[in-house]
Length: 634
Image (cartoon, rainbow, N blue to C red; front, side, top):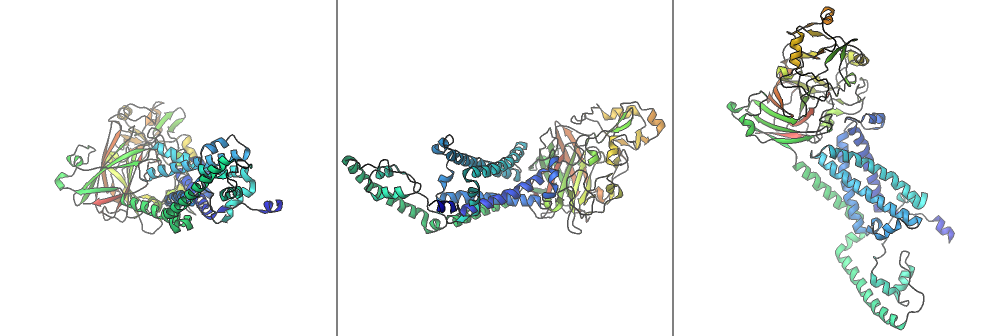
């Protein structure tokens, strides 16, 4: 008898085994892709230590696909447990609660059920918060809950293994690798059954004496005549009730549900997730660009009071995962658009607590000119940077178009320089495939009335300065052909040099006039500039650096880090703009031809998709949203 017991192996039903390992694989993919996505957010630099084991391509797509798989597994498990009669396995009732202070086996069994429910709630939290983020209805709190939920699930996984070890050591752990057929579950306890057990001569009593999980008889003594009479009556009633319950169960479940609960659960889960995916495609965000007469187009001056804007319905896009914005890293972007048959006009408005114009200013110290920065040496300035706004246009009909143009890891391209920031690169993988990018900068481009017209294309060759680490390598991100009207007021150098002293390219001719133009000078990067302030030097009001002029400038003087000279020209000058900031909100008006004819631009038409991003005095840590905006040109 002891030999047979020792050689027996614990097993688990096929349905539980398959659903268990499906869940494990889905969670593994969700975790590694989630970590890679999180690595692109501020404050997650430590994730770079796992760069070699994290995925680099189609990260967002994989993360969303596995999220759908998790929903399917959750639905299938819920249905399977109900159909297979396994609900008692996870039921946390008074008996399980009492088991927490019971014997060792009961205590660990109760802990296991409690841990399962923590896992279920954490998975539910991940599904809900992930859905909100996917549909751009999230917030910084939603992101925090989603991030915390991942760690709670990983903790539950470790605890799950430890608890099962306590329940039966290796034999208990290996049962998940040993599938078996679904066994009939013992009947649910009925009070009438207890009375039936009192009748020692009844077949029911013998049945329960043999059952492995049944209640034992209350007494082995022969009942009194009164009890026998009562129990004979209840035995007859109980058998009749049991027969009725079986009939009702058969009518309710039918032969298919009884024979294969797993197949039915899987089919229903697939149908359910298919309906969810279909509903998702029907809820894509659409920006309608309505047609107006040429006489009704808005004036591009940053003033939102034009009648045409008041008559145009806006679209609101929540964006998150960015830097600053009072620590929240999020803002909601309002978009309106019209066209006159030749040009498209856009109004973008978003909340920004500060009007940030301080683009890498220079401060004169006793040792020389110091570049004010926090991260510029790595291409990730997050303090002394101007506010920015970006628009992306693409023809790529993909829910997650960013996976076609963004590639994670600090070194996503073999043979190319490693990124200084540790973040990924923007580039396309097909020859002559370009994604249109417009970039507005509060100091550098705003004064000229343009947005930089850029693009993502195939990876370009690295320059000598990029190979030497003086400038960050940008993959396929480049400006369109043409010229701009701004440059930095210092020469590029190797990263470690920016921590020492730099030499300005130009100095102001009239120091007092320049100081007045800067307005109230506050070098705290989290405080914005006053109305009318400007933080750039023009070529006319400045002169090339000389020791003689430098000697006349007192210690503590601040000089702008941007020089504005020349004009925009070529393809780079295709997008005109004007912006204003007031009461914690930027308003940016933009105009561009529907079709510029440039191979680097994307036509504005019904098959175009848009993405938007806001920067709050940060170089690369912009906000972002998951789903693209579909353009509908009237």
